[in-house]
Structure formats: C-alpha cells, structure tokens
Image (cartoon, rainbow, N blue to C red; front, top):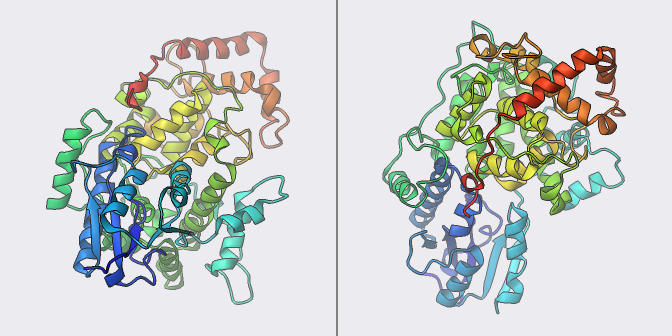
Length: 522
C-alpha cells in the first residue's frame, strides 16, 4: 500500500509504457497510478468497435502488469457506478480518495485533452507537474525552432534532421548510409503475380479482451465496425511478437510493395505495428534500430529499411510537430471551401466502385487500411468530390484503430484534403483512375471502366479529377508541381471539357449524404 499523501500518476490510454516519464523516479510505496475508461474519450466521435476494444483491453492488461509488478493501480472502468465520464472528473474523484501530495502526468497527445490537463493546477489544491512526452524524438520546442522562418515545412528536410539526431542509417562521418537520404523512388512497385506476403500474426482474445468485447457490444452497438476479426496485440509481449514477425518475414519486401493494393489482401507486407506504437506498447526508435540491423545483416534492402525508418522518425515525428504548431486552427481549415457531405457509402460500403468498396470493407472488418488506400483511394475521392473536411476528419478518426487526432488531423486536413492551403503538402494529391489502375488490381473487375473517361460507365475518378482541377484553377495553376497540367486541359476542345464536367456533376448528384449520427452522437 502506498503511503499517505502519495503522488497520483494518471496514465492515459495511449501512454501504456513502463518507462513513461511520469513513472520514472517514482517508488511503489509513494505512488498511486490512476487509469480511467471515460465516456468522453469513447464517444467524442463514434469510434470503431475494434478501436475501443483495443484501447480498453490494452489499458486493462497494462494495469494488471503494473499490479503484478507491485504498483498500486486505481483503475476506473467505464461501467463503474460513479464514473464521472471525463479525465478531469475522474482525477477529481481520485484526489478525494487519495489526498495526493502531487499529481504527476505526461502531456496529452491530443490538443483538447491537453487543454483540460492545463486547467488542473487551478482545479486541485495539490501541486500538478506536467511532463513532456519524451517517447518522441523531437520536442514541441525543437519543431517550432525548426519551423521558424521557413516558407515551406518540407518533411524531407525535417527527416534529415531526425536522422542526424538519432544517428539512424548514418555513417561515422555524418553521411547517409547507402549514399542517398531517401529511396522512395524504389518503393513504388505495382502488385505482381509472384507476391506472396506471409500472414500477419493474429492474437486470440483472452478473458480480459472478451470482457471488453462484451462491454463494447453492449454500450457501443451502434458504432461502426465488427468485432468478429478482432486479433490486435493488446500487450507489450504480443506487440513484440508482431514486431518479430515483421522483421523476420516481411520487411524485405515491405519497401518495393508498400504502395501496392490488392483486392482482399488487407495486410500485404506492412508491419501492422502502428496501433502498438501509438498505444505505447512498442518503442519506435528501437524498431528503427532493428530495421537498420536487418540492413546491416543483409536481411533487408536499403530501400525497405529506409522507407520504414522514414515513416517513423520522419513522417510520424513531423506530423506530431505540425499538429501542435497549427492547433487549434487546423481542425477548422477549409481553404478549398469543400462543402459536400460525406457520402453514406463510406459507412455502408455500398458502392459499385470496387476500389472504394474494398477499402471500406477492410476498414469495417479490421479497423485498418494501409496508407495508400487511405490517401489515394479513400482520400483522393474525398478531395476530388469536395467533401467537407470536418466530415472526413470525423470519419478517419472514428474508423481506424491507430487514429488519434494528433496523427489523423494533419494527415487528413493537410495531406489528403489540402484544406490548410498547402502548409503541409506541396500540392494536392489528386489523381484520376490511372493511378489506382497502375498500383492495384481493383480496376480489372470493376463495374466502371477505367479506360473510359466520360459518359455512362466511365470510372468516376476520371471526370472528377478534371472537375476538381477546373474548379480550383485560380488557386492551383501557379503551383509549380501541378500548374503545367492546365496546359493539357486548355488543349481540349470545349465539347470535351463539357463532357468531363457534366459526367462528373452527374455522378456527384447521385451521392447520398451520410447522416451525421454515423460519426457523432446527436
């Protein structure tokens, strides 16, 4: 039992790390660890059933591990009779129970939660210490310093700084191993017949997880998704096994085929570790070191290893820094004035567009789709169709098990929708059906013809692409990366242009808007 007036250490659901800054230096006889399942976090959007199950199950397993190690854990379940429903409310109840000398907490990953935490010193009589989350490489201050006075916040430049800081894939004389910083050009192979990705490890739900699954079915039965295929790792031990399998079986071909899409093949060569990293079950830098060792041992090529490392210390770190630099305005950005409601088929999957139907099926069944499916199929459609950013943000945040606002919002607002006007991406990632046809097998058996540009039966991405480019010409023509595309448009005769625009508008008029109750409780 802890002493009187212990230190109260709230541990949030994405802070499931034994070396968390708030736990370091604490002793078991003077510490109470507070963990809270609260309604506010489970319902601020209607999260996928697997996402809620994953987080609550991982939290309960982590609490059990801490208790087995001799820590005192005050665990509040969602169904506890007096559950206050919010982090602040539960901390207030814990203060009454334990009369702590101090509250010691690591900063939150999400802006709205951090705003609540920063009010705690005024709400509680004891001292409140808010610590930086040093599980990330770059601090908020470091990112702000890097971004200051830069006209463009180019991820590649930031990534190189992270390479230098960590020493990952660097030679002793400060040069990038292999001679190049970035091997993305080697990581764009389309699917090939000889691909045979091994199955990703699946983890059978134990009693703790099954109890959470029953809770989710009971309390969140109207949320999107299915629990039938719930097999995510929920402990650090399971996550380590998933990592072992990736480095042993899939990293070799991860790079070349990381952008490829195959109907019904949901995992491909991807690591499937993002849920475990974002929960805190795996150390991202240690994973990068293992990837580098695979290269040193000749077990994986440089393009696969560099691509994996770039996603973590480049993109993941950059996105976090960008989020905190631009909040809270980022969530309301809509520079392209996109106003169309999200189509209902994003929730039902009922569309004849084979690429979208497959990505939504995987999302529904697994709470997962890989990054190119999210960007160049689902996201590309939302961009071209002019879907309201808030609708798209809510959808991505709700449906993916690895989605937290700090990583979801910049990707959706900046990368997918260009809603920030180009602060993040140097151009909109707009594409016709040709890209999807090149990088997938989706088009082969689709009801629409990717080779048909306009008229009945034409792949909707084809006319939607030109509809998007035409309506945003004033903003985009001066962009050096895509401005030349307008010369192609200008060479078309008026009849052809009208055909594109009319075909696109005819398709857009068929879209049934989703009811807002899919994403948020009314």
